[in-house]
Length: 403
Image (cartoon, rainbow, N blue to C red):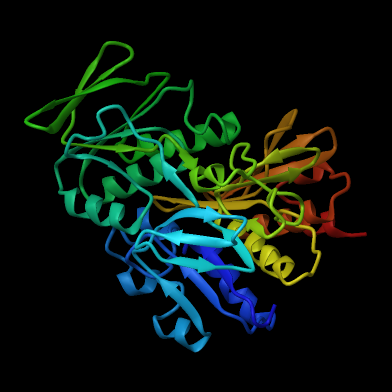
């Protein structure tokens, strides 16, 4: 492949990681990285936190300085959209009409926010891209009334940042509790108490019926319980949709994302996929992970396999969220569990351990990085875990790694 090209559609964390890894592995042929945003590849997690709060400069978001791409001989096309994949000809058609040939193609097209009804009103915003963060930062003026729709991590992070910026924040969640899909009631309770203590008007079990507006600008919301809220701004935090349209139009299999096998290959052996847009085999089923860790690891395996490595992708899920002065670190996936064991740490630190029988499935660690690091290693090792040792705050968790 040294004289053949690799084209990567999507210049986010996954696309960047694949391009960089290809060079690290010795690929000497052309690499083209296509991004539909005007900025070079950047970090997304700080957008709703440090960047929105003005604590991180724009340049610090970038994964590498601009000169990196020329140094590594990576052609970076920003503000450019791939409009078609011609599989038989092995070409990617761009929005300017040009066609790029490829020997291997990586789809790292990411995901986009779900939109609210009434999203066309001024003042109704989402949080995904750098441009989204800039719009929200400009709009967030002290004293304004902000409605956050959705009590997942993105919604909670946006609410926390807005409170710090001096806005009056109401957050609504249609499910019975915040973090209903992704965390145990114990973790929901922890973050509910945190947000209420900082002045967020948090309402669970009530959704958005419709937004109200005047002169093309949002003025408020009617909720499913019939109540009405005035609002100067609305932020949607109701999840994302994987960007699969390009793959679908090319006839690739898609199931909750662009479907890949354990080698990150799609239904076309010349086309690979990685990151938020991708679903892959996991413990007898298929999953799609939205995380920086997965985007990096999966993209690097895809890069190796584009060069013929034959490496199986084995996901090691981990996530994090920063809200007010709390850092939540999550190891594993908590879906299949029959009980939750709480371990108290120093001060406000605590962790929730998800068990299925004697098997550890996941851990939520609040302000307890040492617990998180041990939990990651325990999950990677596998095997039974002593729940009584976990629950005893005086115990040394390193004993879980013995043997």
